[in-house]
Image 1 (cartoon, rainbow over the protein chains, first blue to last red):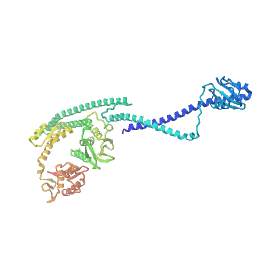
Image 2 (tube, each protein chain N blue to C red; image 1 turned 30 degrees about the horizontal axis):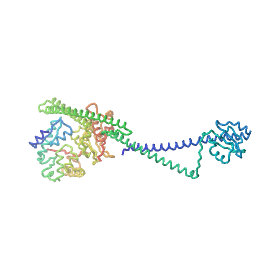
Image 3 (cartoon, chains in turn brown, purple; image 1 turned 120 degrees about the vertical axis):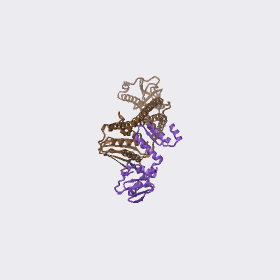
Image 4 (cartoon, rainbow over the protein chains, first blue to last red; image 1 turned 45 degrees about the vertical axis):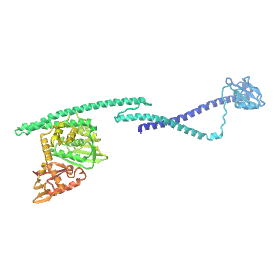
Length: 444
Length: 168
């Protein structure tokens, strides 16, 4: 399962569900606030007017009560115990002047001839304050005590249902998002692995998929161009190398023949030896060039085999010693993990180790001791080549990862690339001489 | 390569490839065809001569004609597998003889533990390192005047052994 898309799906679903619930609770509270406030305020205002009229009537009788200002369209009457109107203010003509007990019972809760009315008891009877017709609505709600006692549980149930609904909706929307997102992230992941990518251009991320496909196509084109350029360069290097080797062999052969001739004068012999030595050097440079070119271009296609490292190390060191060490140089080996096995191109590892040892011999002056050690540690095997010579300049240590501009000085960069090509690394430092550590992963 | 095929149809004579193609793939292709050696240009004439000699020795078993090896006042008789010293004869085991011959063929040069063990026990030599040490000790007892201070079979620390003091 695509982990990134799943994470996005889960987080989006959780956020959507929580947001939906919060909005629901906020809206419910807002609705209750709007619904409850206005009605109460209006009713209280009219009851206050009735209080004022009643107080005025108590204080100064009918005249005083007449002076109380009523809102526009409103009227007020006082009905005595017998049901007769004994005082009125702006009473409409269709409002009766006599009331029975049942009239009072009806109007006290509902309307009087379609006028919304409010009542207030008084010692002289009952004050009735009327508003214009259709000014307000009146609804009579009766709630049992059971309704109040179970209100909390019912609110909780509604909230739970809402939560379930929100979650279900989030899942449905999230699943759709997940499917679309998975397609996009799978495409991006394939792109990072430099695989061929074509994502179906549909769904909510259609534009993104289209851009992804275009990017993948552009990358594929660039990779193909790079591969073609590398192939051309490799062929060119191969061709040059091939063409140089044959005349060089002729030069070397003739120089060697002249040098070893029985009647060759000593100075000619010396010159011939120099030609042989320099030709040999050119031959090595061509080898290096070939190998570097191969490392740059063909590393993926090189064959790997599972081998024990120690025999390779011994073989290389033995070859170096048998080729003849300069006077005053010694080499020795301390190989601690005989069983260490690596997955490698054997020739390349041999070459890397050879470079490290021959560097130590070539760049130091006698007396000099070269020590090679090997040990396994945490899934890796380390090969350390240490000498007690003069060490390497800091700029050389800082640039082991880069191919030098000149053909010489390839030893460390080549070993670095070989180690990297095998999933390992190469570190070089000065410590009473040069210490180079090559770390390679052990074969599983 | 076609020429090589035609040549092989006519004779089994040993063949060395001298070529300017030095890629691993080329080397493998050449050796895979059945070439006895593969030398990439440029090369030293002396190296070519030595390789030809080695190839002739291997192919026509010249080395087998060597009756023995003189090592100071010690003589190792290959045909009878004995060491002659001060008029006495000490027998060599088969493994001791193989190890000595390997050292003798490379006298003056270090022979790695691996090359010695490979000669004595074949491809599955891993694990025989201690046995090799024991055989070399016994060989020293038979060859060296003072086995605790060897003069002929010298240890190259961590690498292998080198045969010194040979008189051909």
